Image (cartoon, rainbow, N blue to C red; front, side, top):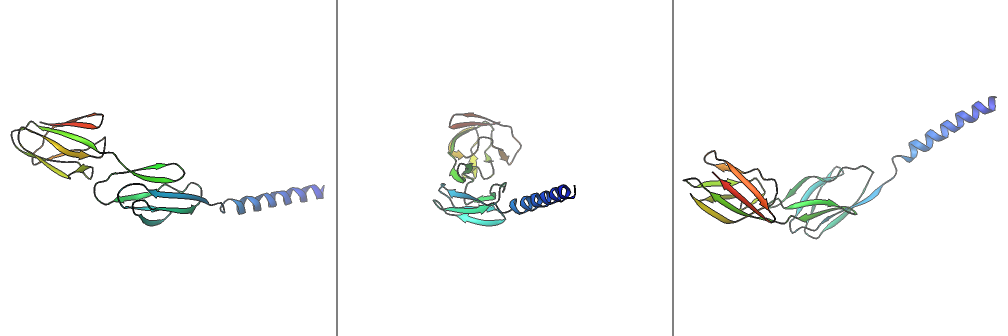
Length: 163
C-alpha cells in the first residue's frame, strides 16, 4: 500500500514539473511585412518598431501575443492589416468623392486623416470632384456652420450631399 501512495505522489510531482516547465518555453516566428507605399510605425510584443515600404521583420513571440498596435502612418491613413503567415500592411484603395454643396455659402469639409486633401472648401451651390477618401465609414465635419451631410457609397465612388 505504501508503494502505491508513493507512486501516486511521484506521478503528481512529475506531471506538475512537466506542465510548469513546458508552458512558457514555446516561441513562434511571426513576420510583419510592409507592402504599403508608406512608412509604418507600430508597437508589437512590447516594443516600438518602424518598417519602410517593402521591409519586413520576423519576431519570436509566445502564443496569443496581441497583433500590432499603435499603428501610425505618415500622411493619409491608408493602410490595412491582414494576417496570412504573419501581418502585412497594405495600401487601402482610395474612393473617389463627388461632393455637392447645396448651401448658399461655401463650406469646409473634413473627415479626420481619411480625406485627401485633409480639408476641402466647396463653393456655394457647387460640386467638387477632385477629392479621395480612404474609409467606407466616414465621420464628416462641416464648418463654419452646422449642416447635414448625407453620403452614399456606390462601388469606388462616394456621393456626398451637404445641405
